[in-house]
Amino acid sequence: MELLLGETREILRTRAGVVVVEDRRWLVLANAGIEASNVSADGETLLLLPEDPDASAARLREALAAATGVAPAVLVIDSTFR
Image (cartoon, rainbow, N blue to C red):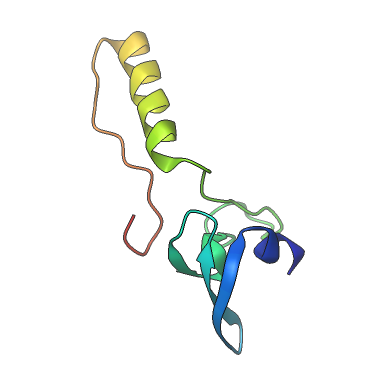
């Protein structure tokens, strides 16, 4: 819960197993976009969205272009819409 609160500007709704929040990037997400299901086999590792998804995508694109000579489109998304 502490991690969820740290990613949250405002709690909008709660129900069993889900907290819908406005996160610190002004996105409305279930459980603040914190991901556990596709991260590790033990289920104990959590993944957060980056503070600035657009800047993260730009850095990945630049690194891929430098390494391969190809600059692909890079999207940093979660399963909702970003």
